[in-house]
Image (cartoon, rainbow, N blue to C red; front, side, top):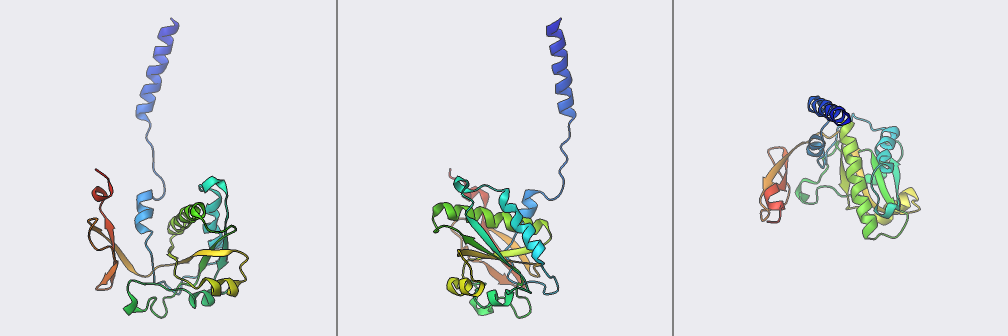
Length: 213
């Protein structure tokens, strides 16, 4: 009798499981990833507040950290706290030098300067990669865009903001005003991004070529 009872309960559970529908809410990961493009031009009327930057940085106490060291620190910069200073010491659009990006009037006006409390090493770089990608995905979720900037004058940034730690990267945050499209390519094709008729194209190696046979 006990066996029959257990079998009956298992059948009920199995039927209930089949009837369970998982409802997806919000944006799917693929949607966020596709929208997470590197914008070099922004809408100047969209002001990004310090509180918005704080929300974006807030992802960092929810993400993985190599050896759980949590050595990254962040300087938040807005239009009112020195964005013009950052702009003097960064470079955007290195693959398109003839365009002199960003175009006048489309410069980003909010930044997150990513710093490390210890000397840069492999583990710190792992943390930085996880951190900046997570923050940009959060920005996209909030209806914003951004770009990771590695080409900047480190010494000038340290001096301008009296940073107690070494800056690794700078993230620009704003409302992107460019048309960006992904272009599927083979692994041996040119990876350089380009612009055509006002659209910015970003080559991405197709999945089949990413997988080792």
